[in-house]
Length: 367
Figure 1: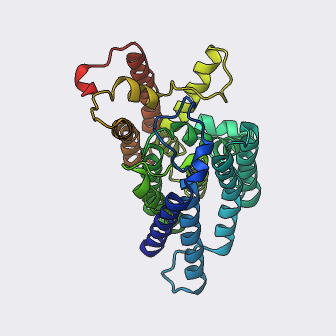
Figure 2: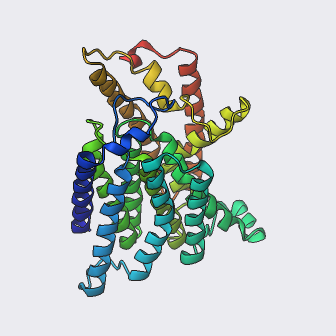
């Protein structure tokens, strides 16, 4: 597992370096007037390509080891690797095309992530076997197709959730690393080494990208990176629950409650204002933190000042993520506690959002 992770890290880091060196021209396609833009200058948005090549290389080498390795190999069979790549590629390539051209409409990207989720259900037979509580599980018995619908929504929707929180240097990438490692930890607890290897190598490929993304801001993940993280993490979450009866389905729910609830809350507030959910704005939680909490940054160079302020935003959200990841890892088989923490997060998020919007943030938090 260590060696394929090293392969993922170095392939991703070297590819990212090549993108930074030779792909700056395409960055001019990203309009300076976009509301979610919080940086100066033209920065390549092809970090997803580096992550894709890094994790694909490590997965394929892991398969080679499984085919010709000894009894201690990770059992990354050709069927598993083939289907994971087949599921990942439609969404990932669609995101990368959008990053290069800025011309792939939202409906086409939604179609490609939906295609990925359909391949997951058809090729891997993914479904949600239980909801964690007896009275909820009865619903799955009465409505057996509900598990398939949840899988379709999860694999198609989580990439867009990661895209929403991908606003500042290191934010979505570090969240992806934290979630992948948490899922890998529980996978090892239940003896699922193959799934853990796929997740650790994904985290390593992301770390290779982060070398250039945080804190220097020389490369962005773009839609491609967000879609890769969303699809891989959704696949791993559902597979972990489906293959291991002791894992509560609310474990991945609590792990991912930040991007999931950010998406739900964003759709709600736009619907209240009569705005389409597909229209970008600058009212997401991380954007409010940037504008109303991270303010005390001084530097003579404007570009440097914006970069420093950008970098200081992400740690607030990393800490927010850890508030859900830590209890999720500690209580991964206790459904009631996991559900309780999910509810606590929703209350905390809405309360914090309202406090920031109403300019009632304590002075010590702004420093």
